[in-house]
Length: 422
Image (cartoon, rainbow, N blue to C red; front, side, top):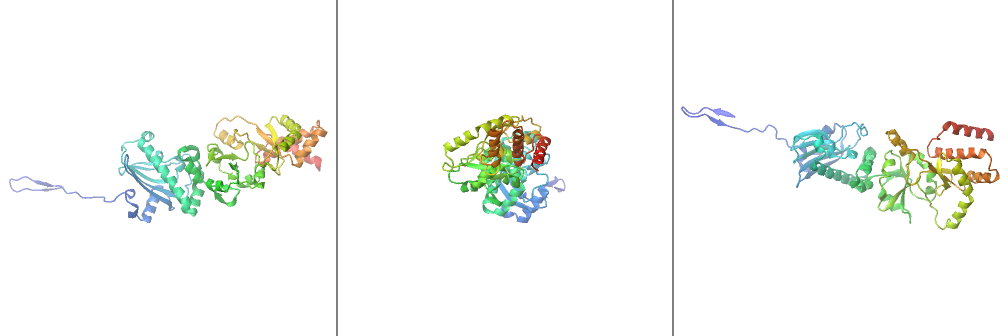
């Protein structure tokens, strides 16, 4: 502003001049054609405090009932605190290009916490708090759209850039699977972009659509096994019949797998079935008639009844197995029961889980089971048979990676039995 003196006897004249101090336009407000890859990369490194280049850049613009612009990034490397409960998550929130908060967790679901970026809303108040954001309908609508956009982008990467998808899944797969538990609106999409190890390949992951495409004729279930490692699962007695008959089994080894399988009843009309829960009978009609099964059940009825009574502190039922081909016995969780691994997770988090008994299944063709049946007929009062039953139960527990309830007692029984055989 300048003031010019007037002529003698006249008034002073005031002139106002406007000078633009900052002509920069926000990066997220520009079209993708106006921004170079290097500019996007530098912006990502700045807001994400990262050193790596982004795996994918997602610009968005919405107009209509409520308006906003967004610029999101999928990193190529997981942050060190991805699974730290106290880590700050969320994207930056701006309102009409004015910065509001750094980590707005209300804009992105927890399982997409690795996504970085900026959201610039037009219809929010600048004086907004985190508590107000939790109940704001505009924020809820933006969150839904951002989530769908990120998931559809991952699906496109999966279909068009398999190498980048493998990188994404390696870095963020465990976090994405958390959405199967919490985001039921997008559960089907998540199931389609998830990948799992399976018995089909030693080194390649598979998707559920690929699994369904390879299913055997007449197969109505998607079989899976949960455990601590692929190696442990492949040696599990529960997989014996499935491997022998060529059924593919998903091998789920992440802790979150124990939880989400209980939240997903089916995929594409195919029910998910644990190889270690409920009853499994893979024998076809021409392999074993109903009459043969009834005869076998009758033949082993006495042994099954005796074992149930003898091991009543450990098991709720003893029955013949349709899933064993090599091992003498295995332990099975009831169809509606909770697995031991999941029970341990709940107890570790402070939740009280009552102890439940499992089912002991026997392989009627195994020499140990056949010999034990004969021994029951010949010398039913032999106390050594009770020890054999305890060892049989303990061996089944160890075979699946469990630990006997009383390790010292089990070790004592085993040592005594070995001493008598030397």
